[in-house]
Length: 490
Image (cartoon, rainbow, N blue to C red):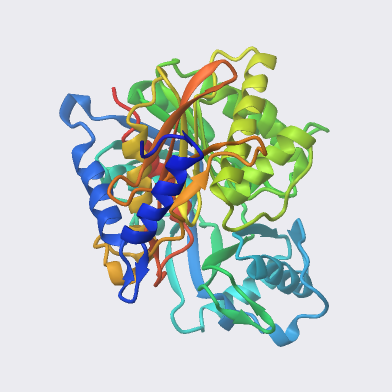
């Protein structure tokens, strides 16, 4: 039966022949595209966000910034690269910047780094402003996710200190809290170095479109909107609380206050903010690119044990699993992992966070993980938990991935490709005898398993990959938010 593991053997041989005949690629393109698109749209249309008194409320923290988008290979000169690509936890020199960018570029991996050298950063900002096509937009996990929730019909509250100029990017219906009305704000600027698939940087070629982010933040690492956010939460009564933007603390030079760990203190306040919410308010943590092991360990004790859901991309999944299992940072991972590999890491990560739930006697248990990759969406939810419509959520996330990256609501098949094969294994376990077969007319595959004593549902949706990428930064925020919009109701 499509979408469920079956035993290999005669049935496998028959189905493989069937797919070879009816769903092969032809001279005019991948014949699977049209039925996949139609079914994903059908799932989306059948599942809507409720309105009126039943409209769900989401509250998101923390922070916002001004994003400056620039063509990476026009901003940086490959001839200035000295030595081999190398990753750095913090950028202090031009040489480190070039080596770090190239390291992630050649892997097609997303990355975000703090540049402590303010003069160097300002010099690159000035240079970027003179490059054709450079553009400004609002940035930060919270505002990008907030805009997506609003577009999908939710009532939204989000926390950030922002200038009046930056607020112009936010729909008026979204409530912004965190700053003082008359405060003269200087917005943090994030520089987004974008590149397309097959772009070249000297002898290196990008295997996929992606972005490298560098920043020199002053406000966001301190979570400066946290207290004001807390004042508004009781009156807003959110159905969903989203914790994001904590990666701004990564390698930031916090000044010690009387010998105290200021970063740990701020994260304790985040923990208290989550705990202050009633259990019926679901809590979601949005992962990001982290390299600071101390910060990651703080997250595993102060945030992850107290949330119901975690969202991340394939790089972040590998990193989170590595920290939980081995206490080590994984800087880069496969940019297009096999489904079986991702599912195994999701299962292990689920079990490890459940251990943290018990260790810290949390009243909440992890009941949802969403992993978004270039080729597919994978959502795991515990059966009989508060999360609804996992299948539709996976479809919604897939459609949003295409629409956002192509910067168009219309899905044009001439700008689409699929990377999924006609079947995939559900695990890398050598004893595995189960496969899921991909039916273009029923492309979202769902099945049940027992994990840690709980019955869980896992859904995999193929992504209609945009072959003419217009946007890369912010894709994950939009995809994660889209995956949540159908899974929560009052």
